[in-house]
Amino acid sequence: MKSKTLKDYLKQKYDVRYIEEEDCWFAEIEDLPGCMTQGDTYEETKRLIESARRLWIKTAFKRGIRIPEPGERTQACQVQYRLEIQPIRRKELVPSRALAA
Image (cartoon, rainbow, N blue to C red):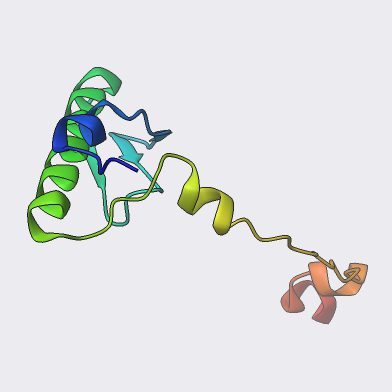
């Protein structure tokens, strides 16, 4: 099997997770650990995460660090949660000073 070149890795498409905060945008590529950024607008953040992705891949390639395939890390890290919510007694919702009155 032929090893991938830097150009091959840079062509790969990774899923990006965007989160809109109160006053900025956050973006992360979960398949590339630590590859994240933030910006004032969605458009700025989109440009910044593309730059971060390219820099992450170039740095890993030059240092001989294994570059995950798109979807590899997110598929391996899927976890199933079971959430149990305990019922709250109405008495617990009333402020204590209201009970004293």
